[in-house]
Structures are given as structure tokens and as C-alpha cells.
Length: 125
Image 1: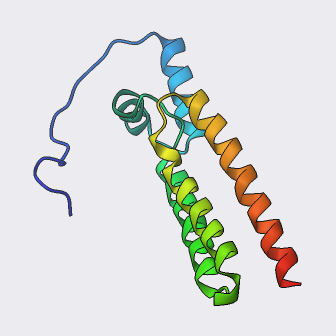
Image 2: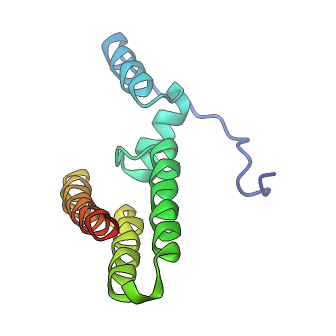
């Protein structure tokens, strides 16, 4: 349940041209958001292109990596700690400023994650 501060009780209106409305509706649909949710996301979060669904999926990925790291035999301690660090790096993706930085960080971190996963896979064979 939302706290009193988080309850949406204020309505604002804005003037838009038909083409602006269409453009916003298309972008909202791409992100699987309503018109209103998309507008709030853009205003509050700077349209960082990270939807709540993406955050959930990324957290699931981080949790899976941590679970795998936790199940590695203690003799593979270094690999285990490397994998934990990569999960931590992935978890910190959402603190960048611009969408370009987020994309660059995601690209870099996913490369590290894949590299670590491949090393782990090879060691488990």
C-alpha cells in the first residue's frame, strides 16, 4: 500500500499538438506504459529508458548470478568472488546519468558477465 506522500491525488493538464500526443503514445506503448505513466517517467526519471520491468529482470539476473556464486565449491573461492563482484557491478547499472552512459555501462558489464560466465562454465566441465 502506498504512503500518503505517494498517493496520486493531483491532476495537471498540458496542451499538446495531435502529433505530440501521437508521438508520446507511441513511445509509451513501446515501453509498455500508459500515457500518464510515461509522462511521469520522463519528468521524474529523465526518460532514462529503464522501465520497471527492466529493473525487475536485471534484479532477477543479479540474484541468479549470486545464487550460482553461492553454490560454487569453496576450492573455487577466487572464481566465486569474481562472479559476486560482476553481479555487484550489474546491480549498480542504474546509477548512471545519461541513457548513453547507461548503454555503455550495460555493454561493458554484460561483456564482463559473459566473460566470467564462460570461464565458470569451462571450469565446471
